Length: 264
Length: 267
Picture 1 (cartoon, rainbow over the protein chains, first blue to last red):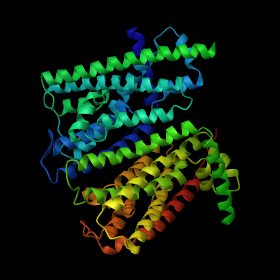
Picture 2 (cartoon, rainbow over the protein chains, first blue to last red; picture 1 turned 30 degrees about the vertical axis):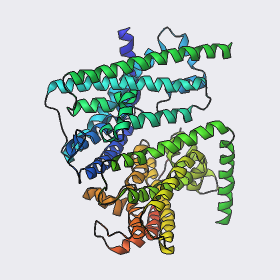
Picture 3 (cartoon, chains in turn red, green; picture 1 turned 90 degrees about the vertical axis):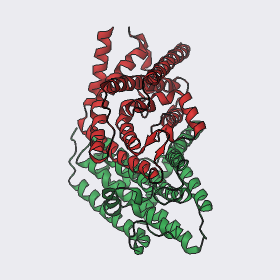
Picture 4 (cartoon, one colour; picture 1 turned 120 degrees about the horizontal axis):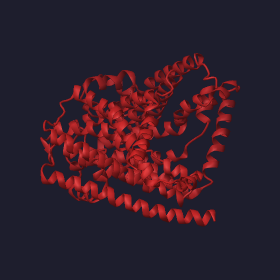
């Protein structure tokens, strides 16, 4: 089982590694946006010292972490499952002697590793050359960050898997998928740190599963969550990953019943 | 020219009719795009929840920058957004078919489809622009309204030039779509904020290379009667149409050069 998962992850990795040109073009774009967001956030600190627990250095570090993690977390543009449902290929997939959700999860973890190394690290390094970014000194923070990013990928995958399944019920799933991506992009802290939100909105963001996808690992990197609080944050991520994966399985089962009736 | 316009109208008309066939899906998609495009503005509002000004620009003034840029960009997106499909057209040999037809290659690529879902972005931008116009402390004289309209048209032309020029990279590097995105979508994002908050290299880039400063920043300075925080010559506030012409001409040259050196993938 583990061996199979590893093989699938390798395929996920290789599928994205096949286009190095596209990877470098993507690094260029992430870097460009990293600059834009860093400058926009820095303009806030012209007139004040801190926003919540963010100072200017935290904000700049946030900008480069968020851009670096963008492709790894992959909130946008993943329709692999929806496409297979629409084309009907999912019927064959479901006959295979392996778990459908587990198959795609393993594949996605492989993809995430590729994107973390080749789309994540280069923009961050460029940002670190130009701006004064914060780099944790404590190896335990690094370890917690890696665990947290992994949990963030699983949570993000579980959510993507879920909204892809809309294709069982809607021929054109794109509208519904876009609405899902709008929610995840905003409430995850992908475009502005949740600490900048008004209190009521920040409360809502932390009550939703999306903060576990982007903001949680960033808080750990910045050292805003330490000790028990850090463990609590990791626990929250694990909780949402498990809940969303389970909902995904339930919805898949419902979709399969519908598929059987239709194909009848 | 008139004949070409007639062909454009008929090609685009058929694409529009085809998309209106599935109304619920269409409504969902437009709504989704409206909200997606609104995310950038939500981010601006979040920042202004913390401060009263960004680089000496108030929330109404930044909303004006945002509105001008967003409406211009949405118009461009509707008109030439199909250029994003160029790498696929080259890879799949579709571009070869285009070259043998007796019609300009650029026109054909642009008309290959018109994505009405981008109406979401146009609606969202127009709403922000109208609210900004009502909100900012400006006496709306004829010359200011004229400047606003000129800015939108010139801005759309500048974005179109950028889109055509950077899409042409695909003729050299097929995997380069993301680089083009940095200047088209990234250009729109850049023009939504005041140029004076950016670092020096980025300010130079948006003034001289990818001239999105002329989409929103300079026209807005005129409309708001605001002293330029960068202290640049006032004449630049009237330069947008000229910059649009130069960008358009440069883009056309790049496209022509690129198409001339194009060799089919041969598969």
